[in-house]
Length: 256
Image (cartoon, rainbow, N blue to C red; front, side, top):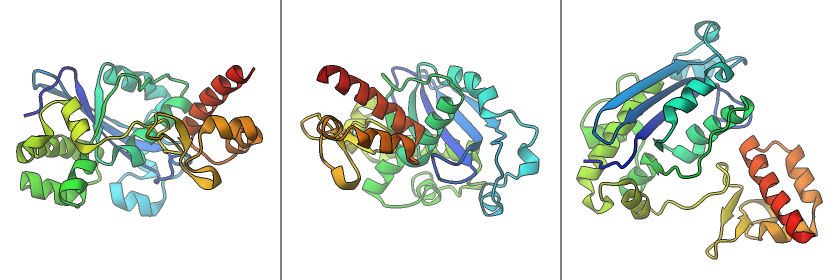
């Protein structure tokens, strides 16, 4: 079974779509597992303040009418942040949607949510390395249960918690604590959640996209400071722009 030194929060969100920059959260569920094995659950419906496409409502079941009287993320942000205080995080496909979109919402709400000191376990990454399946298939494979109500945030978050515990039983090489799990699955150190920047094998911040892919951020920004302006005006996630500004400020201060 999972051995924890601090709480582990299993997060699942449903949104208006999958564009981290443009779409908004409509439902969030968090299953917080404590070191003593007890768990608490928080689920909130969120008014995204933008229309939910009919095709997306068909997936998660939430419509504009159902969320119109719900709080906005800004109104719920402090409550959500407090619930996550002191927690490591776990999601299914953590870096593709759930955590990046959650970070964007916190930034828009002007609520600081610091990822420093938090470890992240991506349950999907374990599954894909071992079995190559989807969440529903993972639940059936590891827990021998059918995932009734899939794409409901609380159902998916609870399933994710059950899957991780089943994975630990099936793959003893993962160990039973967060550090050993992350080491076993080779979780890389990231800079921004959209992975526009990463650390290379020497621990240097480099671009991870476009014409400068693989080049140190410092080298590019010193030679082409206008590249910073181009990115800040572009359709990049706010988390990416935030990290870019931090690097740019540090690099320019060293330059002078």
